[in-house]
Image (tube, rainbow, N blue to C red; front, side):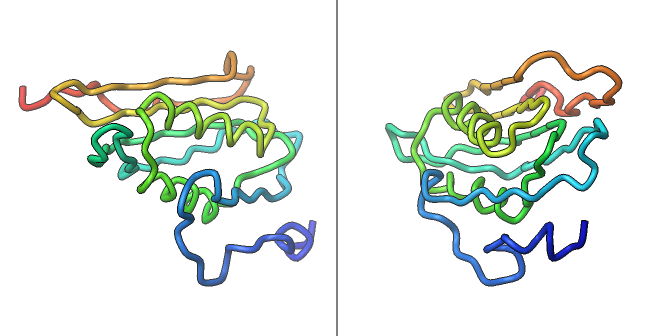
Length: 155
């Protein structure tokens, strides 16, 4: 597949873009998977994800690890970065942010499989980790451990 054919419909890559004001207004773009028919895992790591507490307005921070086995579509990484950045001024609880990201990607990509780990930094002294997965890992696909140790504080 020629590059122009794959990338011709992208609107954010290669140009100036601004951070969307909310996740609902962010445009997640996808491109055809040139390796469709081959089962493999794609991983995105966002170690500096931020959102806002919906009650206090204080910032919350997380380390997100997103794994997926694509089918016909891949997520365009700049649009994913802008989508994740749009949570910076968005008020939602940790669980809602983590699962909403997974569901939006599933809706956009229709992957064979998807998993997200949201490793949230402590709020009120309690770290919250959120995990969502669409089903069992497809056979014959290597999906490594997410590699984020449990929170240990200063101990």
